[in-house]
Image 1 (tube, helix red, strand yellow):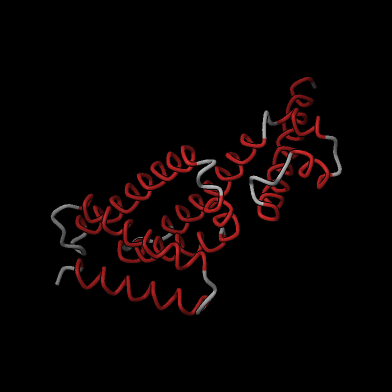
Image 2 (tube, rainbow, N blue to C red):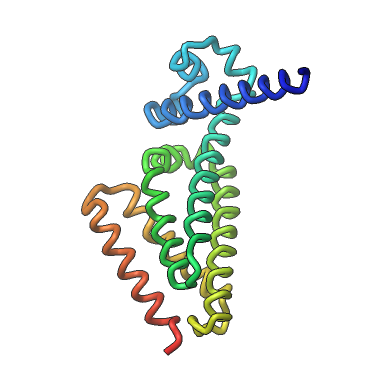
Length: 204
């Protein structure tokens, strides 16, 4: 009985934390990190500010968890979609497409990060470095499988992975700060990138 009550309490706390993070994300997007306050978040939830402080120590704490939540969601979605594929070519294609579409869905939050870069520079730099390394590891695993299966011909899968991740990063800003071309333009750019990748690394 006691275990059941504890489990229910934990579930309720987790639900409230998630609601706070989701609400805070909307507030950050609406006002920007600098102008948003704990009062804004509490008011949006219909709760007192003390209720927010019970779960989070500061606005910065919430901001970091919002970013972490969205990144984890995107990483999980990419990993799941890539795992469904058996062929290394399809794995790489799915990775590229899911990654860029995932970033596009975070466009509003990305703009908050971009405008608040100075205030959160250390955290953003650290998060970006960690994310870059995780991406390189994913792509390296895909390329290693492709080499093993005789599909890709590469001398250094790690360096190639770095090049691919770097190329994708170069597409982020045009994708996230402009509406020009919409989904069609994104698909065209991804198709061209994939053509270049496969033309250079598929064993012939």
